[in-house]
Length: 110
Image (cartoon, rainbow, N blue to C red):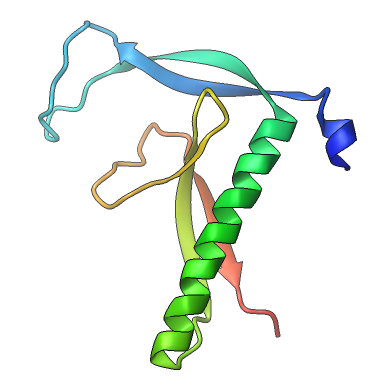
């Protein structure tokens, strides 16, 4: 599907919003219950942001391979899509339970 065809398309994305009880807890052992909301995001915006993310991550791993002289066989990354269509890498310590993370698996071509 071309960008022109995607320009009119919308995707529904369910995102977490404010805590249900209005509190702001930084305690990782007592996670907050978050309310969710559904928003529409332009498919073209999401495609642009995902392409940028993949290009940057690919470049990072190519540089790493060149520096150490080894090839990565496979890389798995979890990403999150925001209500604005931004694509963000899920860092360590982020619990994926209840999150709508997308797992991307990149394998070397044979």
